[in-house]
Length: 303
Image (cartoon, rainbow, N blue to C red; front, side, top):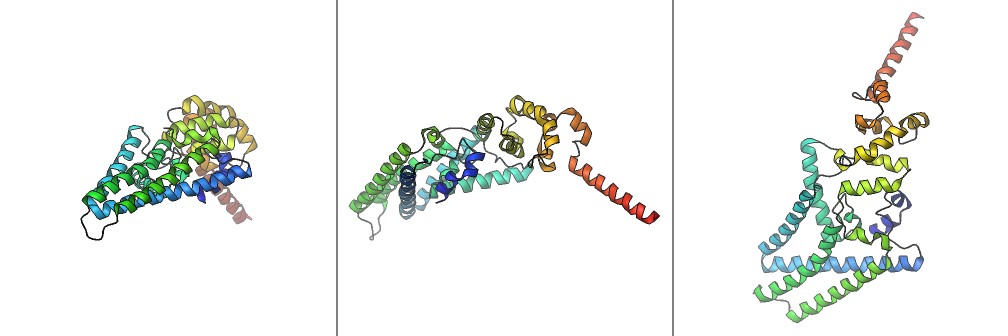
């Protein structure tokens, strides 16, 4: 299962320590957690798809209204929170188009798969994830009621059968949810309902990582909106303080591409002057390499 594999991945736990790691360390706890995820996902998906099917049979317009209102509320939530645009470092129309598509697809995926890593603040978010989980339960009751009262075709599913099936699925959903919430590590429970945005989450992550430069450096590869509100307070002092050391040590992540993503004001003035940050160190190196090549060719011709 993708959720379980991602959460137990050592790499993901290192890069996203505030998000990945809810699965218990002991074997029994892991087994119970895995089974509860499976059964909760099973119940959620069946409840929501059944609700959609019953609404489509009763009145397709009701299904469109249900899905449209759900998506509209999600879009409005993201916009009000200033978190609509995706964290990728894009610009202009491309950024707008990607945001619309990405928010739509991840919301649909979360609704119909309950993929738990989509609760990440940079994706759907904790609170929308929780709301989606309860929407499947509430929507199933509403759809059964509407189907029982407004579907007039001869081949109609018996009301008692629907109620029994609905009750069984809701029971599985509830028991699985309670089991899951009781077995995971307490410090990660809030990730399933919090209201962090991409910006607030990255700020918390930056502070939590302390002296881990590699993990911190990844934040600067994202769109400036992710760190603009707190970058001068936290990122700028970190880069100014450590830049000389990075230039000497040349860590693997300290590449020309990474440097190009760093805002000018986060780079010490002497280094900005040295490799003319406005055009990028990559371009300077290319010009330098080209000049060296021409010089070598000139020497060969003289010989």
